[in-house]
Length: 207
Image (cartoon, rainbow, N blue to C red; front, side, top):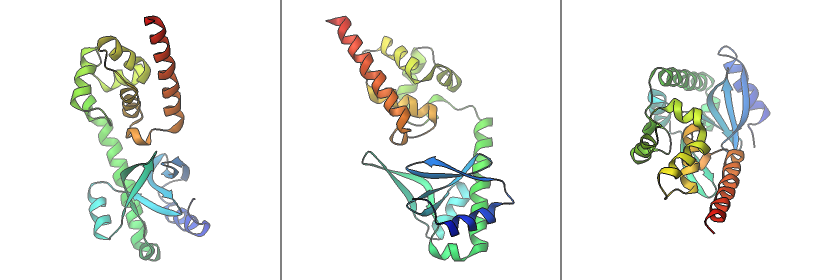
């Protein structure tokens, strides 16, 4: 369920000076974007602002609660904070917070573009998987993105026998930039089917 018409109109009016407001399906609800920058989400009729650095401190001090997303029964806490009733009534404060969420998200995007990430810094990976990727000739984030989850998984499979579907999904999440639990349904289903067929072919070869 999305925001009520009145609240969406209130939000749209308040952010008009920042850019064009759009929505898209996200985390079982809707993501709200300003000129392509995801600064908030709406779920169950509530609005949650993205928390980054200083903004997060202010949101917590205001008593705003974190968004907990349940994916296949697994609770995942995200850095988005609920706009409560008192904040909806305080128009000036609300749009200061909306502006903070937007500005800090922009700053994060710029920082990420400047900073060359290591593989271990991507979601779901860590040092162990990073080392395994190094062994198969994948040492840069760009190389992982270019190869994609399936080709990378096949490289790992050739090098070590103990691969499983969890590693495939972890790689896909790293490429998508999200926790494995919130991997888009379409991507997950495609990978599960591909892995099942791969297992079937492998067992066929060995029989």
